[in-house]
Amino acid sequence: MIAPVKSDDFYSCLPSFANFQELTLDRHFVRAPDEWFVVMTDVVGSTQAIEAGRYKDVNTIGAASISVVSGLLGRDFPCMFGGDGATLLVPPEVIDRVLDGLRRLQRLSRNQFQIELRVGRITVGEVHRTGHAIEVAKHELRAGKCTAIFRGGGLSEAEKRIKGEASVYCVEAATDGDLELTGLSCRWNALPSRRGRIMALLVRSQVEPAARVYDELLAELNRIYDGQLDETNPVSNESLSYRSAADCIQGESRFHTRKTTLSYLKRLLEIAAAVLVFKHRWPPLVFNARRYRASMREHSDHRKFDDMLRMILDCSDEQVETIRAYLEAQRLEGRLCYGIHLSDVALMTCFVQDIQDGQHIHFIDGGDGGYTMASKQLKEQLRKP
Image (cartoon, rainbow, N blue to C red; front, side, top):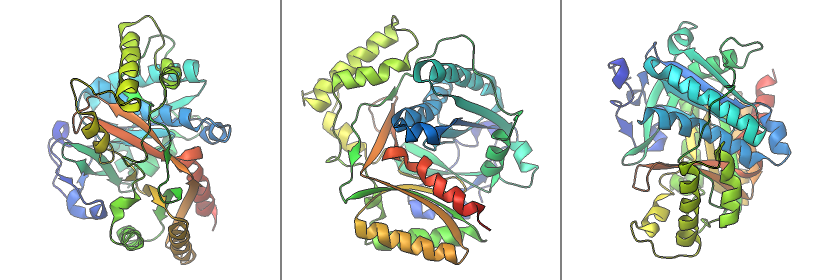
């Protein structure tokens, strides 16, 4: 494991790794500083909202947690999108600003989306004192753009405390104050599977060393995809299609509590320009639209790890059955628990600070609930003796 560095620099100084199959290697990880905070958000009643057909709204509010904090901090920080919420690590000197922004997001979510968002925080040190660790690594999607990898069991402990009954770790929504979700957008249609099915997959090891379970699973997935694990990515140039201007405006107007601001006018102009460029193929004057579109695949977070493996996979029917058979055999041996949800499409929510490489990220989930629905099966297996 990497030696600790000064608290302020702990994430920015962390070396990254590009090969996702190296996510279990000790040399990539550093222990999070005790004085930092774990901040977690999640949509209350997300399963019921998804079953009512509101899976896109759930995804949007989950991703908004990251966009709000990123806008406040103006720098990279460890975070992970989980479908119906997010996990973030933030330094103590900004925790008040972060919580204020997220409390405003709670208010916007309730008023504009009729969705309740839970926000909680706990210090890393308090989690460490329970005997669980929060260790962080940095996976490089492409040069200049990384996502965080978490291990050690500490996030699971933090989640248990934040979601506990009458939790003292949760904060209440703001009663006033506007918020605008700048940089966040939902302008691309659902991504159809190129192979037949989109699988939302969750896997949690039940034995030690857990690394061996994940290493073997990733090796099996690599074999199933003929040595091309990157082919699991559901984002491709062929699968991308832009929504109409009316659809974009209808969806994103809720990102602003007031419609008389310059930022809302700017959003309308951005939508109009983007629809002309990406839907109607008008040649842009100031950027390379073809390059940006092609780069979206490498900027997508379709696989991640936070004490469990989370992946959105583009699969053939044969690959679905092969993966399911492998996981079930491993479950019966007591080595892991898993959750699977299948759909015909993947969903993409975008956070674009700039169109240049490394300045945008695309949060990927399965259609019809993806990760949230897969978690139902995982939780059932975890409850069984």
